[in-house]
Image 1 (cartoon, rainbow, N blue to C red):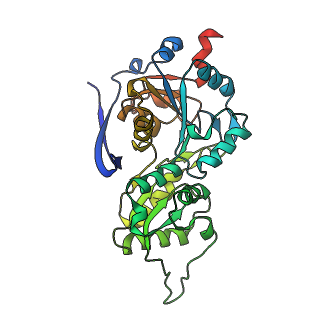
Image 2: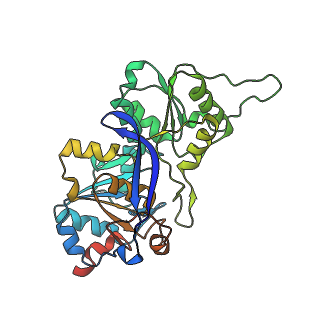
Length: 328
């Protein structure tokens, strides 16, 4: 019989923060993980593609071969496309610039969703602005840019890079008691000052929210190797607060709920395409989508087919270029 792994996650559903258990069934044998061999039939059953970016569209700042032509062919066939990422370092406008710089200028900004946008959307959905509180950011420019767009005040972010707390005899770090939420995202300037400031806000300020843009273990800063991801920053804050964060990026349902509510999509005709089993594929499976794992990112074929893997995509393939391999 198949092995069932149960995991606990806090996420956003129907404008409420909930804690839920989800299960993922492991294949009884490796043959249950099917490689995509008939891409035309697969495409015919789908109307919408939701693409992860890192490891699917690009690696670091390098575009994956054949991606522009593949995306254009999908658009020519009438498929709708959206691009989602757990990386919070850029806002939607920032990612639009990256798409343009990589020659993907035909992708409009309203098809791009980052976890920085999801964090702002979550605060908007929970009417955080009405509390009159501010946000402390552990992260880069993307989160602050998105909060600015909805008029939520914030502190921290890049302003706290390079800071060191006073740690002499009798010293203490003073913190802002009006902080009502701490948002933690990927941060290349992560330091002890930010850890201490975040834990003071979460532990000392009544009802302070602890929000994580994602729990990714590794990320693609360059195409040469994997780098520690946003989950490492979140883990440090979780470690000193004892609190589980509300996760707004994948596999939280917030982004897909937003798209389905806005456009009225049939979930059975949406495919989530990603390179991560624990976020992309779990995100798709838990939300009733078809799922396709590509091997152009962090997950190898050996890891996918390993008996230890308990997450099974609908199909897997080398990269999205294979969508039209049978019509080359």
